[in-house]
Image 1: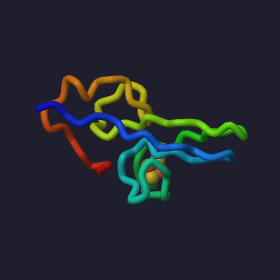
Image 2 (image 1 turned 45 degrees about the vertical axis):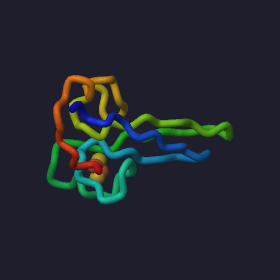
Image 3 (image 1 turned 90 degrees about the vertical axis):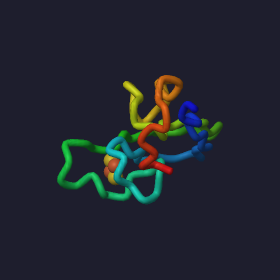
Image 4 (image 1 turned 30 degrees about the horizontal axis):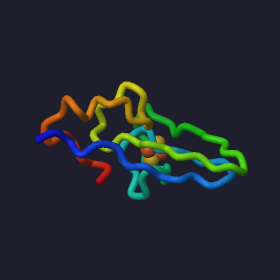
Amino acid sequence: MTHPGPKVQKLEEGRHAICTCGNTENAPFCDGSHKGTNRTPEIVDVDAAGMNLAWCTCRNSGNVPRCDGSHSQVRGGDTQFE
Ligand code: FES
């Protein structure tokens, strides 16, 4: 069985800090838990139309925090975000 894939989150207008380290307790948003790692959040500015973010839950994406389809190659995967 492969990993279930990304989660889609609707981001409302405004500035958002998206977790790239996988340590947050408030995925997909940064909660400051990256301190002590070499990661920093990705800052995303969303306009009034909003934006759907398909964020990686398997931590195998080459484009974290976004899903790149790598979950299709993962059996079980690392589900730290779930
Ligand atoms: S908690 Fe993961 S980047 Fe901030």
